[in-house]
Length: 450
Image (cartoon, rainbow, N blue to C red):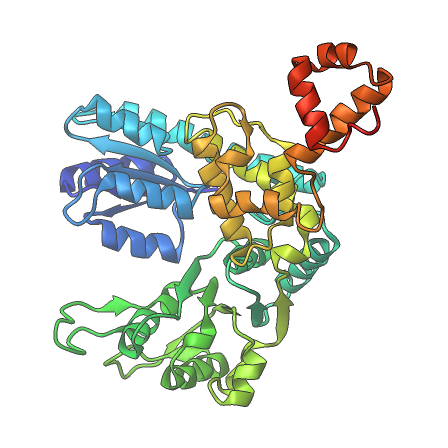
């Protein structure tokens, strides 16, 4: 099947040369002069392969590469540089680029690299398909756990993914709400279409409106171009609205209209735009309680709450902690140039007993720090944050440990008893002069027994 290929380069001859050649090879090729316009289209429908100039008028190619590999790990990237800098090329490869081209390049070289990169994309997809068919790989990336709570969650994700209804995900911060939303999208019939994420917290009403609905040219001062909003750019795919409980009341009204009518108006627009999107919302608040308190619309709550997924906090599935720790050790060992393969029993005991107010996100940060500080291939107690190290001593509360003097008295008394109170032999065993032994016997009240 044809593959989508983007050519992101501010030089028009380069864009024209590559897009025409790629189209002749049967690919859907599209050129972009700037990073912003490319990223808008990438969010709408991801490209399988991206030719990316290392220097763009509005973006740093290496930063864009990092963002690409983080948000679209299945896409391959070939970097283009006019400077022939080996340092830039090496850095690009470290950040996940498939290969690089130095200008001026031969067209045949570019096409051979494209063929190799797209073959890698296809092999990855086929490998995943075969593994999933054989039951060897979970199609829920990033979601880890063998506890009953997580197995029940995985089953619910698979069931709800097959139905195109609104989903509400509730759980404490750091429990993986966006990972669950992405898993639902990946298993759904919309998997080949965009997944668009937006955090509703911490933004003004005007900014939320502009980001979600977009605007027409001239809609307000500074609106020199038309902007496509996130809802519209997700056409055919999934929109994930995180921290929906933070959305201002007036925006709740507009979102309710979207849920009911499946259409929007851009800011400054007059023509309604039909939407075909799957809405998944998430909150770390109890939205039912927010409805009772009057801070969240009841009608919107029931529109979003067709199916609710409640994510368990990490402290309620402690049996998953060793599995997560192993996963994060593997994740950060290579980037840090380490070979951390294990966690000491004492350190694992502390990690398992901690309550994690920040949940899996906090555990990941703790393990990341420990991997960075570890001297060998094993994480030790001293590699953990100081507040966690205190748990090792807190576990001794309630257990009375003898003082040094009590231990010494017990040992001297035992040696004296074993030697029949022969002070010469006892002093030799204890490694003490007879005069010192005599003083300690007197101090500890052992004289009368002699």
